[in-house]
Length: 352
Ligand SMILES: Nc1ncnc2c1ncn2[C@@H]1O[C@H](COP(=O)(O)OP(=O)(O)O)[C@@H](O)[C@H]1O
Ligand SMILES: [Mg+2]
Image (cartoon, rainbow, N blue to C red; front, side):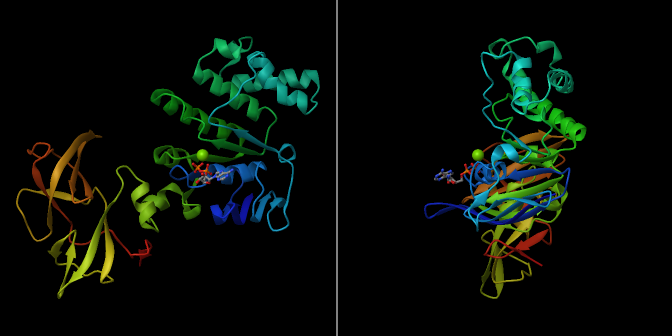
């Protein structure tokens, strides 16, 4: 098990990681998801032992490996963890086989054991036929496979990935996702995978931590995040398309939703109403719960149509069966269902 306790990292006065506490079960595929700059790499570097925490502890298999409170950490090489970066540096003067064998030489494995393990790993990543080639003789995607083979060769019990697919083209990225999940099943190694891509997170993870500005907003299974987002940030960052979030304000004796009076019963005078794109509808005419929006985009999605409208900075998305007859730039009516799917307070947290 991987346990992170009250982990904080400061650079000068800037807090890049703020009081993060998470327990990841053995064998999990744990994804750290968040926008650029939210502290993912910093957290991963602390797990790898490349960065000392300012406060808090990291525990691998009941053994403390970093302790910020005591200013102490186990050396990266002695952690039994392997790290794959976004930009992977293979040794240009070594063949594919040489690159994968190198960490095994460093750990002083015997020649026959090394040869057997290299063959095994090359086969696992389906690059056996490239064993004698040099890095400049293979494609970017193949180089990435070699980098992964080199990392898993010493059988680390924790595998760390920092956006390993972001330099690959879209098709290769989808293939490598499947490949990495297969690899995870084959090795059983607890995996920590950093990405800003919520689709990657939702398809690959057993557990996800959504981060924003150094803090973990929510930790759970991908379905938890979709079914029960705890914060506005999670509700609007996760999911395809993301949820609609509309401001609600008390006005006279009633309430305005997205600037229009509507018959709602919110839990606070000022809050946010969340509507899933699937529950949002379109309407021919204005009605009690319609909002006029400028049609900005329609696109086909799995046999249905995703319609996006924009007005005064409010962006709404509905998934409907048929495309509206309107053209881009026309005004169309979005119709809200009688009740939102969730309410959120002005502090960004779910109510109820
Ligand atoms: N060595 C450093 N010194 C100062 N600030 C840093 C350092 N490393 C990262 N940061 C800052 O910490 C924040 C988080 O960075 P990082 O962990 O790289 O984010 P992410 O990987 O999520 O994009 C950023 O604002 C970044 O500028
Ligand atoms: Mg990063």
